[in-house]
Image 1 (cartoon, rainbow, N blue to C red):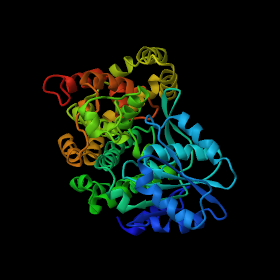
Image 2 (image 1 turned 135 degrees about the vertical axis):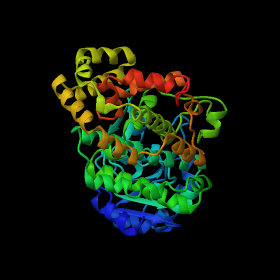
Image 3 (image 1 turned 180 degrees about the vertical axis):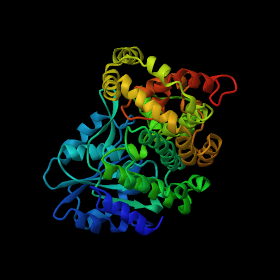
Image 4 (image 1 turned 60 degrees about the vertical axis):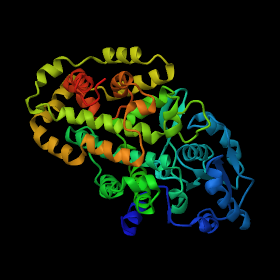
Length: 460
């Protein structure tokens, strides 16, 4: 990607004013902070892994310039994750009037500090330590509260510093996780194509091109992601940042998130962890008895799963869809609510899902209109989807080359549970995705059965 492309995307962002991406740029941190937050002092917030990677250098440069408010806050809780209780722990540190948070870390630290800063009505700054996800530059933070994983409102950082020397030296699994998160923009784009074609949610051209135009380039060197080659990490980082800027511009995660993310959010809500050698191999924190798979790795499995579903759909002649039959089988809202109550026993996820299902419910009349459009325009829609998607086997090969898991068992999810997850994930978001097409056409059960049957891509 050219410098102009990145700068253009940055100019469209609502909150982020500066992205400093390059080798050995941590030495500029004091001047960047002074320019972005005149008259203020910074407070570093990191964890026990990210502080030695980049926090110490940030501390050195800020203290030399007399820009630190207090000693760094280093969170060393072995169960640290993006949970609201940690937000509440950070907030008191940010209440003094002159304090500006500097998040040094990746997904968890960034989301926690982002939300905490919002709660005290202050901007913040982020120092990225790995190309591990797109949330650095995104509006909102993915936080678990009361057992439900949700995107909580909060502005993106005012400034982001991404030192490629630090990023390339990050654990290989961190950057592999980021590659998987960026690859998710492929099926997420397909879901947006469907939503646009059926009149549910129009594609925003500006956001679309910000994410999609450079996507193939950013994903072209999976082996280099594994080895920490700057030729792979730089475009990967740019791609992740661009996705965040698109979400800032649209004030929505739609440009970067589709059905594949719903699988990840579901497993977050279910507090999924796993044990054993795979946990040690794929876990960033190898001193834990149980490991939660990274966001990117969960999304990567979701990506493969969703692409497998798309390929199954392509074998179905939807231009011959019996619209009247599908409409006659459409369950009233009361029955769909009953499905949610049966699927989710924990109150937080259950109440959350009930709202999502209610929000996206449509009448039989509207359903008939949607399915008629799908049937009459299926050849053209299918052509666009095939052009957007990469084949399942190619996707699997690329993810594997980065060191990312490519089977659900590698992140501790059995095939039986993956099958069940299709049904739960569909209820988890009001966003229209391929899962809604499966449900509304009446093919959901058939397609899932075929995916998991002997000879199916996800055969049990």
